[in-house]
Amino acid sequence: MTIEKTASAGTLESSDILVTVEKGEPKKGVVIKLTSSVSKQFGKQIKTVITECVQTLGFEDLIVTAVDSGALDCTIRARVKTAIYRACGSTDYVWEA
Image (cartoon, rainbow, N blue to C red):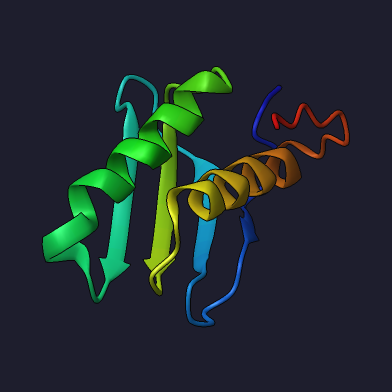
């Protein structure tokens, strides 16, 4: 899969996260721009979940902008995957239980 466009998934509602992904610069790795009211408590965990999800899908150079409103890890994973699939224009979803 290749990033074709900027895409997002999620909402700004409570217990959700709005994730936007776009193609990053080569050799810059995964760049995460996180805005969260709980970033002091959970920012490191949120960034870890996002990074692991991006790498699991095989991407290395990606910019992820996340606006968190108290989302659980499972919601973060779902939003990141959905945004990436949308950015790639793919409908070949591989969802885990």
